[in-house]
Length: 461
Image 1 (spheres, rainbow, N blue to C red):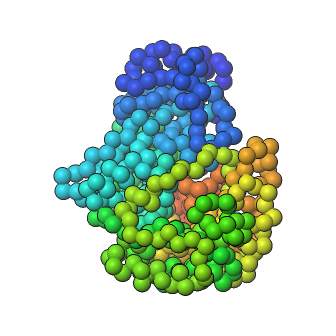
Image 2 (cartoon, rainbow, N blue to C red):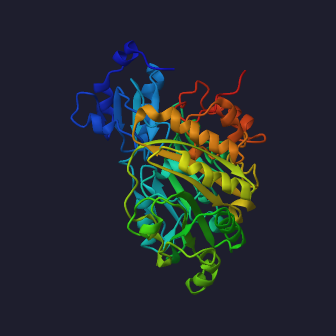
Image 3 (cartoon, helix red, strand yellow):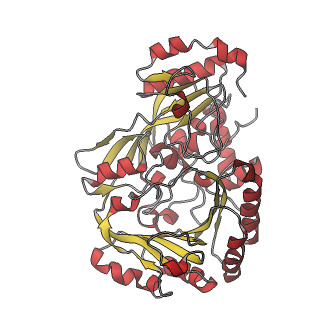
């Protein structure tokens, strides 16, 4: 469905610009090169125009223009899509970043947020009231993107996924209509967008449940990596109270100032922690992790929840990666990780291990389009590199490691997937989820206008 030069000439961009409350940036604009950028490098695409929308009505106007002219349509909030789905050659881009308001209800129980807000912006705004919603682990990602993918973050074991705290969404559908989706209004659409990403429309506002959290015990603990340390970390995370969520990054230690110099270049487990129970009990909860080995760095402490999102944001680079769900990680697999990490020539690589369970597992698999509730572990493998020509080399290393430690066609988390074939996408929506999503795609977007995503094609017939 690539746009043609003839189509690009057909759309009157001046007319579209006059209809928008926001702005329309075309190639003759001084901000064009900045406006067409996305986070990851390697996507040097040149859209016909980038619409910096200011309202759901703006979004509807751009959607209608793309539909009526046959132009390809991309939409982005934070622009962190690894396959570069937030931009397009010759088509229209909806840039939601200017729509970033956060409105907390008077009782402090819920908040409405526009989907162009980042996780950091939203968290800082709600934390002023001592309230938060779990939104991943990186401050610069867009609220819209992470929520529609599911949202696996620092509060997953205690408060569930982001979608488990989504109460309603304002969505612009393929016919240019602005609808509200919730359990009571458009319930099928509400089911689909909770894990089905942007296949069914452009979400412009979300109503999210807030948890009362101010001070936590969290931060980073860096341990020497061995098969025993890796499996011990995962066992301790599984045994911990669900108030604790962890992320274990198994990697070669970079020369970072917080890491002891003797550890530079050695394999480490860089653990990230968020304990949201009583602060006075934090030391006891974290003790089993500290007991695994003498740490290279221990930065665990009481802190305000938003501090988890502070610090330097990752630099945009090229990235190869994949992920999958598992029930556990065997010692042999931990050994394979340590054996294969040094074989990569990437500037940085890591295997990220997230123990799941708790609140997210108490939701039935078929309650939302995220259908991996019964899996105990998510494995995410990434290689970061600087030379675009090395893409195939690094992706081959990622795929080889994934297969050797147990991927074997198991489903992955769409929020971390790259460009995937249909077989891999089907595995991301197991059971009857894939076919139900295809049926709803036919209902809400039969012409597949919203296809620049991990695409779910409309059902046949």
